[in-house]
Length: 346
Image 1: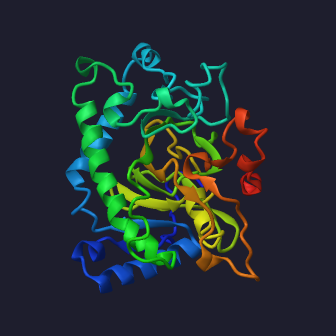
Image 2 (image 1 turned 135 degrees about the vertical axis):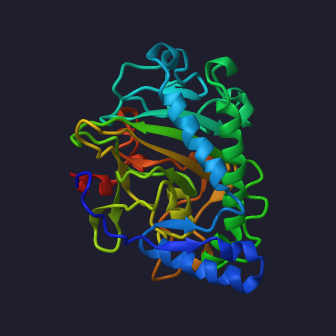
């Protein structure tokens, strides 16, 4: 699909205003719609989320993302991923490029630049290099990028508030009590990734096909299509629509898939820039990856296990549940990160 072609509005839309009401009936209705979205598509839009995530906060985040990616290459090189995998990711780098000692690029085929920031992670680096808060991350001096850290901090606080507000609904969708996740996200492992997909005349994939390793991902995207999803209902790769100047999409990760014993499949997807021609624009997105505390045990819940549906997954700590698919050359030897669904993408 190329820029300008109409994209079917096929994704579910969930109304966060139901959560803001604060009553059990509204929560139950939202959870019912959430479960239907997770069982079928695994990707859905949110609307009426401003009580948690104001539009002004979103606009500042997208402006900060644009400003950071407009820096000269010398500044970006000085900001390369450090040993905690925080900072700037050049084209061809994976999220582990810094902690791996910055090996020769490319590590994967995608044409994508990004900035990466962590909380209570990343889980694969030694404890002394893990970052407990946004403030501990790798930032340029304020004078080189004025207002960037403040915009990122404001957005992080807001999107995490939205994520926490949805936990009782996820618990009900998983046939648990609304309080099931209490204590399991005390020190959530999270990441913010500021993506930049340069125009390639529609010839290059930005990020190769993969499924996220987290519980769920909150994706802030601009007005440009470019997200392609493997639709679980029919096994077809389909372009995801956009909604207005910016929108919030949520997708299921491998952690939630394990909890549901596969009932809520993680969503295989890619992302690219489809803009072409003399006026082509780069595409930007800001995913917020959200997982339980790294020492929380993740295993299929009893509600989804039976004689006819035995447990598909062994128990694992949350910090050891990773993304899968075409996630870089270093992961090719890991059978748990191999995902045959990625092979259906052409």
